[in-house]
Image (cartoon, rainbow, N blue to C red; front, side, top):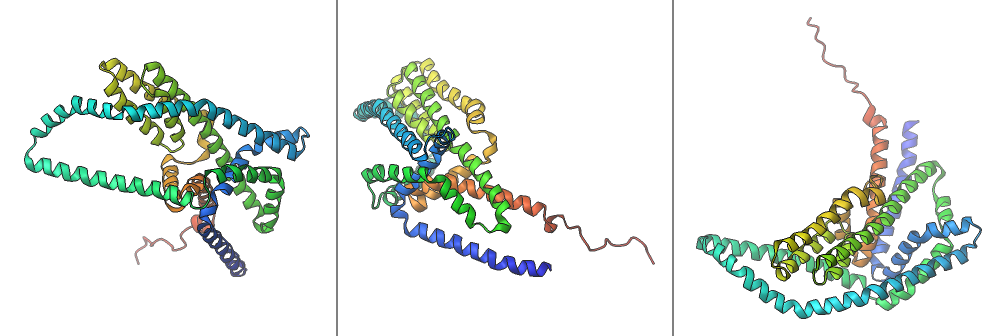
Length: 368
């Protein structure tokens, strides 16, 4: 009987493997045109709870979708009108001031560097120069290749205008028909695996919603903390640096690292006293402390089960393979894989393969 069940499972497993391979192949072939559709699906998933609340209060689904989507678009436009002029002004001023900052850094720190280098032997200096050139070249090449793939693969056919036009349309139709879409997918699942599928979808939805919505609030909070804190300290261009650091905080360690490095460089150039430099450092220490002990536990929670290293790997892998589309789907794919791996491990530990005792009898201690 067991062999018969196993024979039935083999074609079924083979079928799902073929479906997965076909989906990945289609994703790879269609990657230049997927960006507006993936962005629209992500936006629909993000806004669906609001539409569901309106539908629960007997608001027609199409009307609730239109109201929520229109409100989100107006919020984004208002946010851009408030932030973009500030970022644009400070960025232009920073670019104009860069030569002055470079000269000040050279005047202030190069004598100390030369003094330290002169203490080394010529052989050590040559080794240090070769190592620095090699590591710098590797980092620049890696980051440059990542950015190149991100831009060229993400915007091969659709420019930014097309993205802004198609994405709201896709989001509207998906939000309007979201219950129908989920019901149709549910009906396609084999009835023998239906309970497992529902369990997996519930875990995936909890992980994705908890991470995406919570992390968006974390990024917004960190942007405010860094921007307001650096501005109050008196750092030039502090608001722009804080906003960019908050947005980049969606990628673990990248936002805080970028903001800390740029802010400290500007602080060493701008300030002569150690107190102001220490205050700039304190802004990021406070931000990281709040993120680790207040914001992330309260807004995201530990239930999502997505380790920062796993997220970082997924984002870089997605960006290298599929460009900006890969970055958009990296976290959902990582969440899905994480949930499936946890379910597979749970089923494995409850299976006879894991629990089966050793049938080989232990060697007897009785001597003939």
